[in-house]
Length: 633
Image (cartoon, rainbow, N blue to C red; front, side, top):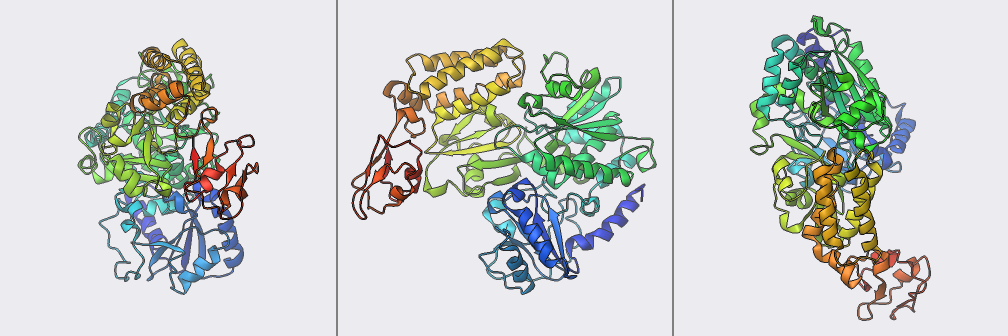
């Protein structure tokens, strides 16, 4: 079947809506993005199929990530006329129990995360809800009432966790490809670009450049134009783009189609990390399905617009996330950045006008065209409109993928959504923007998160990584870690980045080893300023951020390392040792049992002793002690 009109889409949407929202059989949706698979969802899926494949009343399906990675594997179970229930931690040994729980309508609290309202797409909220009459389950909250989800607004993530990413029909059932076909038949290129400009959408890849202006500029230049999607997500702790590609690849394809029509392009490329095999697999499937329905290829929808998309996998170089380096790699050349005085919208891929946006940016585009620019611009702040997806990781209770309106405070993200710091420890800092982002201290927790506010305190939005750190984090070591990463990922093309980062790293390493000396802090500041000013590309200009912000906000830790030869957090092994506090030790023997070196001795209910000559400072005793009797000296 080739889709030619909106009516064709509407018929297909109606046919699959019932199967998606209120199936006659019990439908079991197992979250099988990388996070779910890593937590054991593949084994759960296999067990369910092996045990229930002969049961004609049960259908076992796969979905993407619904965001709450801390509770993976997540399994949703639903059927017509009954509540939709989300089960948590459903590993191989619990999958059959969870399905039986749903069949019997028991809803054991140890298994259930929450019940779900009919999860209509953000594009379909005006439609009648056939599940609305179903009474709520006593004592089981709706997902929307759970703190992790309460403040989220899912636009880019609107379909992740709700559809099978390898079934284009389910994407269409949730409003997919309607924006593209309507724009193709009812809007001019200028009208599309004007809508994107009015929405205030800024690039979500890190730079934050206004998307509509980029499209408009690219469309003005003559020559073969290209649409490029940057899916080269290389930040440690970041997995926003990966989750969208794994859970909703068609939203990216549709965004690229709209962009292609708007700027007059016939060809698009998705540059995705080789380390994302599941994302690549689902993209390949999505492209083939879109082609089979006539939504990619020649004369789409009976028009004179033709568009094709190809996938290119990168070799893991972090610098290839930079636009010019990415395009060089796409051409088969060494991925090295070039000077920015010639913009890629004028001369980019193959020296032709090229529009590059990232995964999240493209996934926002269909929603903006269907819901309107005013609707999108109504969220966020004056200069940062809409929502932003963050991967919330580190020392926080509720790790996962969150999408929130721009302007929400760091405190709300860390404490309301993230549930605060584990083990009642103190918050120390949060790093935003990946390895080149700054570390923001507690006094700025009420800062609104948007492009401009983060820059004011020395950090960046970046692509959306957010790493939380607690009292046991050494900020000097954090700066050293990220600088070590950036040194390895520098392309080495320009002296300030290649040599400057190495010099800063050498100084930081000496400080962590107890070899720091007076003047090192000032030298780090001088080197950082030089690298920021003279580096060729964004990797170099932002690389000193972790060092400079930790010096500004945690200078006392640097001074303790240099002058007192101590690491207050007990991380830099050359600068601390563990000791047992005699007044707090209860003689429970937990530390002695867990010590791999047998360095701790003592009888039960008597004070224990730690032999420093045997201690390797692994920290196991420190983490194991429930009475804070193991202390850092």
